[in-house]
Image 1 (cartoon, helix red, strand yellow):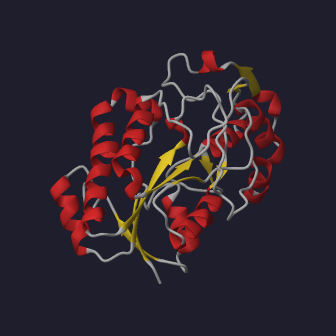
Image 2 (cartoon, rainbow, N blue to C red):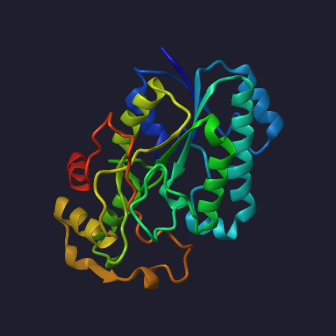
Image 3 (cartoon, rainbow, N blue to C red):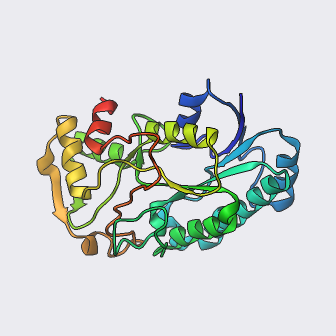
Length: 274
């Protein structure tokens, strides 16, 4: 059984990966209480002493708007932390998978494939792209997009945020002239199972099978959970993100390489949440 060291194991995605794949791999969780990945010596010493075959690097500062005001800590975690982890893993001659994001693209000329050229807009996206450049062609890069799952108490994804607002009868604004690619986290886990077992230091996109506007996504969520879709008010990309960090407007992200796992479309993924 392969030994997988994992950072970010208590987060939205990492915790579900462990739940679903705990009988496939032996996971070694690297917790914040174990090491501060921004501390190079501490990271090197910890990774040197543990035994693993591959390290799955999920840890990161992911608050896109918060990153604009907290640039120093975002840089330390997403760039310096990634370099510290990568260098320590590379020194042991072990494999590494770096989890990145569709936000590395600018959303101006979709669709985006594994060989599309990144052009990040926000500071968060810049740091994730810097992480990609650090690991380069010596590790696997897996880009994800708008991940969602059934339940996770510490953090709500965008699906559960919308569902909760509608359950509370709160009106919400959702963008009509933008595209997102929601991705069911269970699919991410099973996709990573294949990629771990068939490791190659290249870029992969593990993304959902549907590209749609946030407004359309909101209406599908309302329909699936029998909630009032009249509470969803249309707005434009420009209006909605006026005082927020920029996101890729047309985040139509796809894969040329995923011939190993059919990814659920958004409607199918929502039905599985039921």
